[in-house]
Structures are given as C-alpha cells and as structure tokens.
Length: 236
Image (cartoon, rainbow, N blue to C red; front, side, top):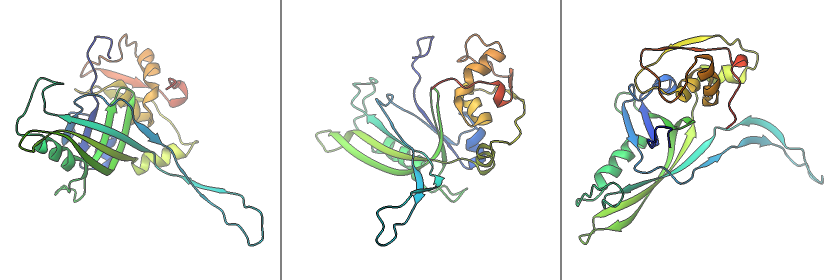
C-alpha cells in the first residue's frame, strides 16, 4: 500500500522492441495490463550453467562454471467476472479478457514479427522480460458453461538489452552522471532500473534530489542520477 493509501496494482507493459522496453514507461507502451488483484506470491529462479565430465574409473569431477542463465519469474494472474471482487459482473464470461491477455504475452505482432517485449512493474520490482510459458485454468462457470473465473500462470524469462548487459558485466566500465526529465507514468524505481539496471537505488536518488516523497514525481521535473558508486543501493 502506498503512503497515500492508494493500492498499487501490478502492471505488465508491452513494447515492440527491446530498447523501447528498457527505457519506456506506461505512456510509451503499446499495450498494458493491470492485475485485478495483486499476486499473493511469486517465484524467482536463478540458475547457472555448469560443465564437468567424470573420467572412467574416477570418483568424481570438479563442476566448472560457464555462465549465468537469465532469471525466470513465475506469476499467477486472476481473472474474475463474478463481480465479487470489483463489483463488475459480466454474464458473457471471461474469454475476451483472457484472450486479450494471451495475445499481449504470446501473440505474433505484425510490426515486429514476434511477440512483445515486456516489463513487469510492481513497487520495487522492475523485470524486463519475455513470456515463455502460459497456462490457463478455468475454475468457475455459468449455468450455460461460460467460464467466469480463470487463473493464468505465466513464466517470464529476463531479457536485457545487449549494450546494457555488456556494461553490467564489465565491472570497470565508466559510469556517468545522468539527468532525466520526468514523464507521465514514470516512477523512481523504474528510472533507476533504466539507468543503473537495478531499481534499488531509488532512496539514494530521492535523497540527492531532495524528494520528500519518491512516489510522487512531477512530470517535467529534472532529476539527477549520480555515478553508481555515489548512489548506495537500498537493501531489497
């Protein structure tokens, strides 16, 4: 819950290209989805690729690190047209809502000739990704067989723009001060993700810019983002 009492709903933002997904917000998104209710939990998986062979007659082998695999994030999204949750019952069921969600995640887009690049935004969570799995479970039905409740389980795989990935992996790469003009729909964690590749610098940036409430940014305002070594990360 935000300090002003407003509930922050989880957002899924869709973009045609990876660079657009890196820097874009709600205003630039080609399509958006706001969760009916926020997930109770989510699963974040970290994996590494290893190699190692065991010679014949040997008792073991040393496992060697090769590279870090992209993170995978799993969410469950609830669709409900009974009216119990939001007071908006739809007797025709939820096929239309679920199908729109499916097309946003996995549908072939004519302009880019591939599914959308996605960004999940929820509080400090900023996850730029692609949807790699979607399963739909229908759970409640009208007397005529129309589904009115469904759970969509989605697995997302992290996707990072190549230049940003190279800079992130190169620990000695130069880091500069950035100045950004706030746009409608921007959040401080989202801007920190865009510049640093990590949203958890938002409190340091808020302090440097004298922001009393980092959740309320003024469109048109200029914010300073210092070099990363001068902006301590906020613990997750």
